[in-house]
Length: 370
Image (cartoon, rainbow, N blue to C red; front, side, top):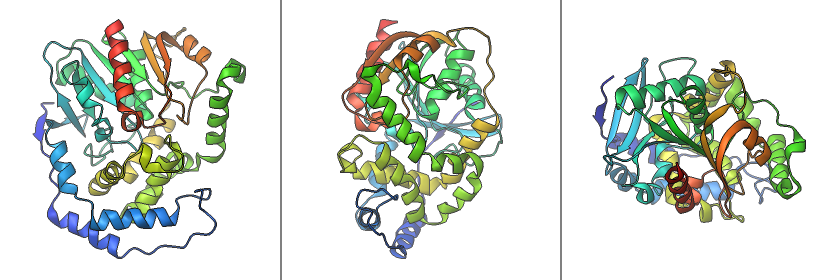
């Protein structure tokens, strides 16, 4: 389990192949879809794909990633990639995202946290450079075990903190639930029940009504992708043969889940968006990242112990206004050992990209309080 130094270096032939495929794209046409009501808007996607082909420079972003130390280690037969920013004597902090995140979502958070924490930022199994996916049944429960091994046995930390969003939130919660002796604190921007149990509607307060309505709309109109990932991820994987098809699948979600007023790139800058797409493309990880949904639901969580709160580790929550999957604060207070709860004024499902300074400030304030 010794980690090996890793350098991100995509062969030039693959970069050229991407540009050639983009040049051969066939678009289907788009009727009365100015508001993205029916899915990814063709006019926007055409413009984005032309920029990806003609103006986006992967090597610039690859160089930026390689300014930080990267490693790969095999855990239980699965390759795991992680970026590590050392700060001797500081609290180790594990940063976890989900789908469609990559480790590089945290790039704008790093300058705010460097020197304050020893940072470890992995890709989930089957995501990005934690590929290829070689081991079945790696959902969020099994991934928590892998990442605890990474932090304690591979990197040698006796105690550590963890932040998570999306699937990373569930991995982080499971770490705090199962390994409470080693996890100093849990911070999340998307608290969620580990067993996916419905949350009583009466727990929402009148002040939280807008967030309850937004969440209900997402469950009703925004989760078709979830059913595909959870039931037929291998079918989704074949979208990875076309950069346009892959981009349409991912961009629609980033557009729908970000905090913007119609201009996606105000919240999620174009270069950042194309770097996310490039990582998924070059690692061919659309299908294996989707597989995480199926494995998480088909290998459900089992409690390590009974009783409330389910997570006894000190917990902090940063609630961003346009997060699509929100829960009532009163439920959070029952489920977690809640020590800090702050509702921010800007940000959606990707706070590390949309509002990195605020996320970093919350992480600093919460862990300092412990």
